[in-house]
Amino acid sequence: MTRMKQQVLVLYLASSALDSDVVGWSRYDGTGRTRPTTGDSDEPPYRTGLAALEDGWRLFQASQLLPPYPGHEYDTSFLKHEFLFEKL
Image (cartoon, rainbow, N blue to C red; front, side):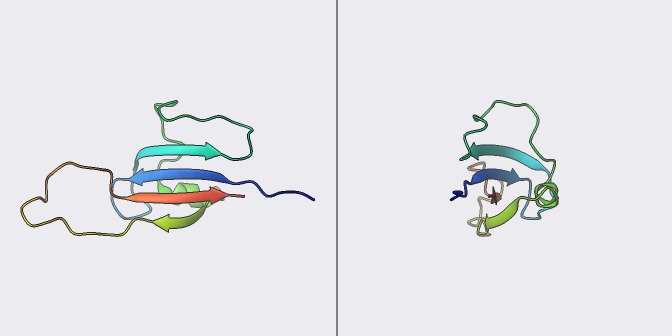
């Protein structure tokens, strides 16, 4: 019996559009074939979220779009355009 193993890719995009540029990322490999760590590359694994879809990653979660509180439109905080992808 073959057990399915999951790889997870977290991409933070410049906007809520999947074709916007990747500005941050994390990878996790449940197969054990690789051991990626945060900050192990200066280049993102994909240029856009759409490129990840085209390479076979399945999108399973996108961040909720929340408007900024009035007067805080230009505050810096967490990266809010988070997209989670998986490969089985």
